[in-house]
Length: 174
Ligand SMILES: [Zn+2]
Image 1 (cartoon, rainbow, N blue to C red):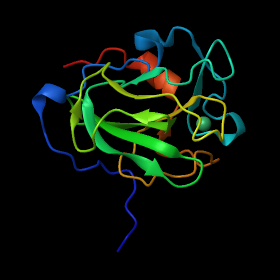
Image 2 (image 1 turned 90 degrees about the vertical axis):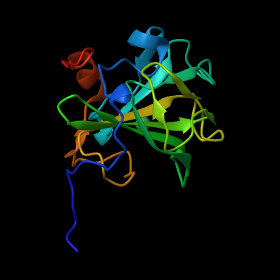
Image 3 (image 1 turned 45 degrees about the horizontal axis):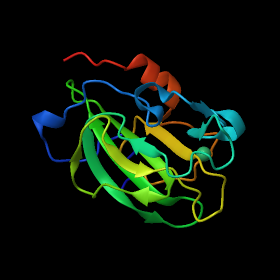
Image 4 (image 1 turned 30 degrees about the vertical axis):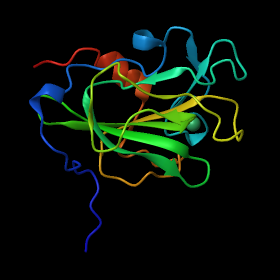
């Protein structure tokens, strides 16, 4: 069987949950009070590490929000450095899909295989049981059916710069 990459994930259709735009996952809706401690591409990072401006663990248990309407593909604890991870598929009116990934969560507050609305609280910022200072590892992907990956790679096909993507997609045309 060939390896398929760059394909859409198969999700249920629901017109009420088509994406109408994207917000930031912390400090709703504009990431107020947060900074990106390890931007996309730095040290081959495949996401953003969003931290509270207060530093340390001041952001522990802060709410994490769905960046757009979508479908929760999974919400569970993964092995190794990932910890609790939520993966959401967002479908645009033109059928294009994007995936958002929220990692190292302290709490998961959403069930898998459910639809979410933009701005809904889905979890809280965590440390993966003390492995890190509290922060949100956050990815956006244009390939929505890939494995979880390693969080770092020089090979970025299918991964997007989360900050640039959100800036460019605050509103999505119907
Ligand atoms: Zn990270």
